[in-house]
Length: 173
Image 1 (cartoon, rainbow, N blue to C red):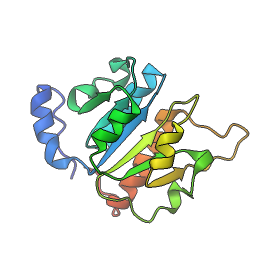
Image 2: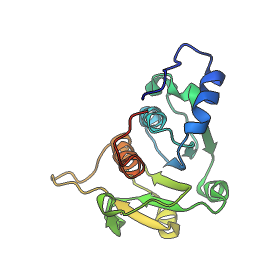
Image 3: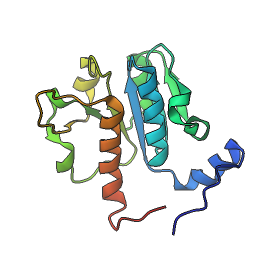
Image 4: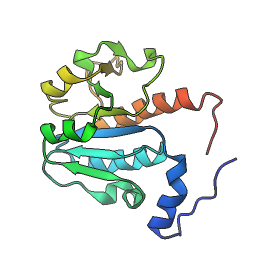
């Protein structure tokens, strides 16, 4: 049974309601370069009840692109890759990077607890340092001439794959 949508409640009240429903994964957007994409990822992360969204790199993002969902989310901004690795505190890191992928996201049997799913900029991908230090490198198969996706779309696909494994019975909350 779906939960009552407390959209008119104060953000802190909504955060308290959502806290026990949060899932055990985080999303990182590294050197994004697209302020609107970060807002869209925040919105998608909200819909999949991600633990947090980590934004790596200087610059701003456009909260309006999250359709107000940023008020209910934990968004951690870190200035650089070194600080990002400190923020991970031993959690598994999975890089989403097609050109370096070791397997397709559809082939993943299970995502580890506490996994941080890292996405790079639409223009440059993930920094090599992150790909090299990642516990897994996952790709999203595409079949057209242009083999890249908008980063918000890629994030949505991977979060959906995570959720498909957790909510095997197709539960809607």
